[in-house]
Amino acid sequence: MQLTSRQVVTQFAHLLQEELFPLLQSSVGPLNGQMRLLASVIFLAPLGRILYARRASTGRPAKDRAALATAFLAKAVLNLPTTRDLISRLRVDEALRRFCGWSSIQALPHESKFSRAFAEFAETELPQQLHEAVIATTQNQRLIGHIARDSTAIPARERFPQTTQQKKQKKKAKQRAAKQCKRTRSKGSFGKAKAAPSGTRIQRQRHQKLAGMLSELPRQCDIGAKKNSHGNLQYWRGYKLHLDVADGQVPISAVLTSASVHDSQVAIPLMTLSSQRVVHLYELMDSAYDADAIHAHSRQLNHVPIIAPHGRRGTTRPSQLPKVFPNRPTPQLSPAQQDRYKERTMSERVNARLKDEFGASHLRVRGAAKVMAHLMFGVLALTVDQWLRMGKAG
Image (cartoon, rainbow, N blue to C red; front, side, top):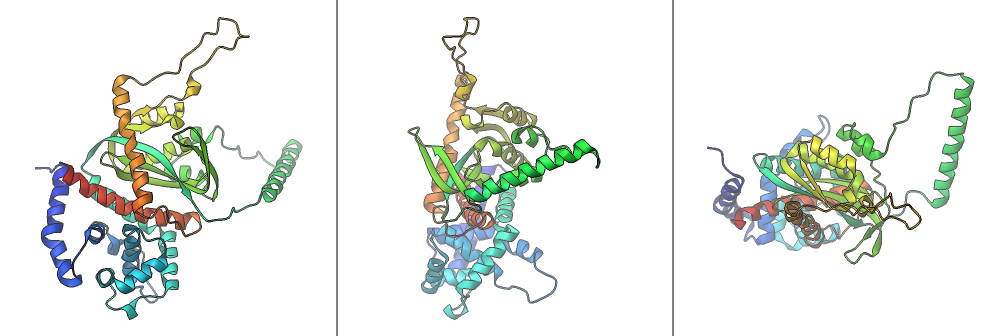
């Protein structure tokens, strides 16, 4: 007999309470709620298997990489702002230190080694792999009703890669190169030039593979703007994290982009990524995602898109136009769609928990790869926490 998702969660929680936690308590001491969550994450995530698969065939093996990865997971679970705070906590918290794998204070690595290990984890996308493995383990037998899609601002202490003057110079150089290419083609000295991709980014994404979609999305630090609940624009410098959240407030997929990237540019990559990981029925999005290509691609993936209509779909008749052009009100969701659309708020609750409890508001690294690794350690811990809560809800 195939178990339901809730039965799987219940059995896993029973295994933790009856076997894993007593064994840990006998070796490291009493476990509080955060330590129990950390143990659950380590128990679910195949940390050793992924680290062993990436180990070089030659050279001295990095035996402490598992301990360092566990420490960075603890940093997210404990919501510690900096790596120095993590090291200070490891020095005074014997249970945490022994759980990570260091038997004494003298065995703790230097701060520089923590930094090098984190750069390695970011380059190899270790937290993203762990999160994908946890999703495959916990959600593969689950039929998900709703996926809520949204983004959240990630402020960063980082400079822009180019100044305004440099961008102007780069633009002028591109214009000169385009003119030179045009003259060359008119003379016929070379063969036909390769045609540039046509259409907008969203239109191109419908015919691209996932890797091609993600490669076209900007990831450098820049300025972003977003309307708050009062309709006022808020600006920030940094990045934007786009999340797909399933029923039960479980993050399924995540993509990091520049702060200036519009939410609609990431809808098709996100729905493609989520479709490869889970089976779901409805996709809930706000009016920023209201584009014909997004509607069509969602249906092509056998999903039902429920997107709040944007005001541009309605028209008003200017006084100077003849009456043959009538007013067209903005279309509205049906009552059944409105009831389902209310579930979209779970994405906002996930964003809030990620920032308040799992370190997303404590960004002290630079570069898109490191920023994504820092955020994904928190997303991984949040995913396991929400999955365990699903078993308690019933």
